[in-house]
Length: 264
Image (cartoon, rainbow, N blue to C red):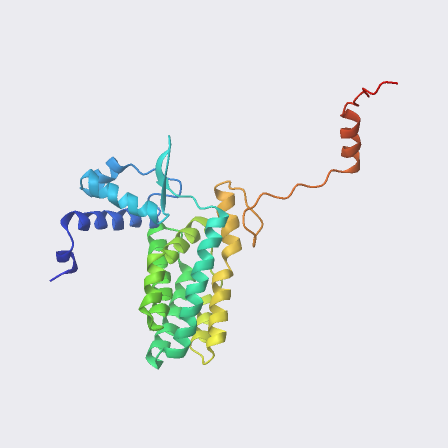
């Protein structure tokens, strides 16, 4: 008996709509900022309006799309702080995955990760900007990071990475920032993870995740004309600068002098 046999028909349709709409977003067929028409999507997917609406609600709850008055529903454009927050959570989960992998993985799993890393770096060096090629490459990139969590032996870590859509968001950030990977980036990471030092593995993964964050923040901010707060700080209002001596004199001169009401 298949999994869908236990799921109500309407729910399975809404899940199928969710997967297909999300794939359109990841393939770049609906870009960041692109408007999503429920009616048009229902026609394209050959479904009724209801499962598409339920799928859109799920995508909105996950932060992939947003609805605004007089604008409608569109693929969400992240702010630099959105990117920072996703990376913070992702780093916390993946550094623990790296630590556990280093402690628990079998020799076969270690060789498997090394082979995946080499292949990923080879593909990164030659992948074209064509959307189909990018989709295939990012799929493999996601698989590499999820495999580390899987071989770490923690189903909860895998579940949290999937549930929070952290790697999917990273996929979108990479695509829209048009970022490139340094040569041998994942091979170097794998060399540390397959070693015998769990602390070094966690540190290497943390550095790996943080290394591209600033570049991606700035690239997306430029592309979508977003005001960019300083890297490493939350987007707070800047503190007002103290007035210069010239400004203080000008204000004092412009302030009317009150006449004394005291009788002489």
